[in-house]
Image (cartoon, rainbow, N blue to C red; front, side):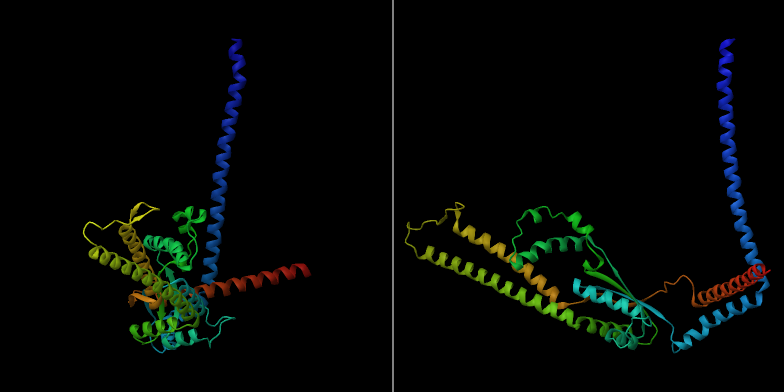
Length: 350
């Protein structure tokens, strides 16, 4: 009997705690619904305001729709805006120029924009209103760039057999790559002219490939690669000369007098060493010529400039009608705020 009496206080405490927890959840749910109802009341009040000023709302919405459907195309010379895109293969220097030109075109009319800049003049002559550049990351590109680090430093004469290059992991290299490091770039344009896509592409690429910065970088790389290529060719020519001389000496030697020359460092046959070095230099020659070809071609077209579907979610009519509605809402809220200021000033004065 005494044990039951001792347990009753614990049971009562547990019941009280459970009731408090349920009340806590109940009050929390009520608080959420009260806030939702306040939001609903605000929406209802806003709808009432729109109804009160319905003439202003309808007028601006219709005006926006008319502007988007008829007036805006007329301002563009009656030419509808077209969307184009193409894919190009570039190098880091060309990428910086592409991204810079994109920023200049998209910032036309702003404070620091220069309408007389050559790229802006070209864009206006072609009817380019907007331009976006997007990198196309590819694993093949990452691998190529990764190995170019050691290959390029070999061309420059730097030693790549160091602790830095031994710990130069591809995963870390990929995480540090930026959009301008990728060779493949997709260019998207919005054009409001009747200029043919092939003419836009031709003039655009001519401008990019003849920019002073790109030409200087191209000439410097070509000069260095040409010297490296000639040195490799000379080394291969020397190896061929030694191989021919060795073959002639072996053929003209008396029977039984021929001896195999031995490289004391590697204990290998001299001809085998020459062939191994010839293979190594041939690979270097291929790498140098491939790098030289990429530099000579500049910005290369992978996919020609073609028209694509309109990527805008809303049509011009709906978009400018929505702008009209937003403008009407701002005006109505401004009127209500002005009335509130009048009431507030009257209360303070009285």
